[in-house]
Length: 434
Image 1: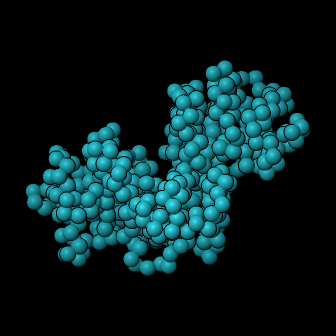
Image 2 (image 1 turned 135 degrees about the vertical axis):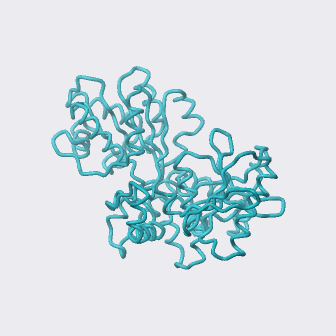
Image 3 (image 1 turned 180 degrees about the horizontal axis):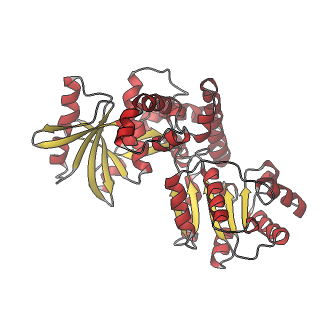
């Protein structure tokens, strides 16, 4: 590309001579990224397409300007600009840097933000060079977990800090709707508004831009997101020919979020080879469209042999493939809890007792089991209550656990239930989320 062509692209995406757009802070991520920027390591933001990674970069640019960094010390590059499509290589990254240095003449070590880096083959070579020679502060984003494959991770070993970005948490969702909950009293005072917001969150998911659309337009936007993820992050990346099969498998896993699955079952359902079933599920995972949860076992070998659960990254995507009905409500709550636990940084597993009783989540932190969680839309039915509560004692015995918190997350009111000398916390899902 010619220098002036590159400069034109850069000028369109940067804010050297124009105001930054208004954005809403996502405090959890903004503070974490700002903290990491104080170090010299490369910062990598990874997560599903359209979850808000680019906006987080803009929030960091705003913070840098607030801290006194000159606009001309900052470079933002959108690597999905169509004008760059035919030039996506490492040489382009260096050309962009050279043009920026020549025309903007930053006096200090520049802050470079590279959006959707996975589009550049061998990007890690250039990034590593910038890091080793202390030439730039680097923050990059990617929508495919294979961008940190073992080979790439090895090249950048000890040089990067990675942050996984999810669609909005329910707390962030409320903030984006200007509905603020700061105290327990707020939960009571705003109960109707909170329940209405939770229904919207459950039906349409939590991609930030979806909130700005009218209800009748949300589904259309979510469909474009789904298509973009499948085609840009999977079909094009892996050069797939069986696009219809990919669509069918993604629809099946998204619509059946939280159901125990096996590669063999998927293979048989879609009449494809075992290798194709395994690979297509892996591609969906790599694009952050689904999350895989293993069955807990103290033996890692057994963990890897057992069937998995797959959770949708966003219920808005799941509901593209489903007709609304009450049967989905329990699995929707389970999906919301699963993604929230992952967002909070926990390792999670499901578990089945010897008598085939299932627990939704074994929650671990730093390799220690700290909580057992069951999710149920309601415990008002005595039969349901008995089934959901009795599993805790069985699991504590089978896994030889000591002092561990036992929780049922439900839409009922929060309370503590005593059962068999155990205290079991019942947490209302909205209260637990905020």
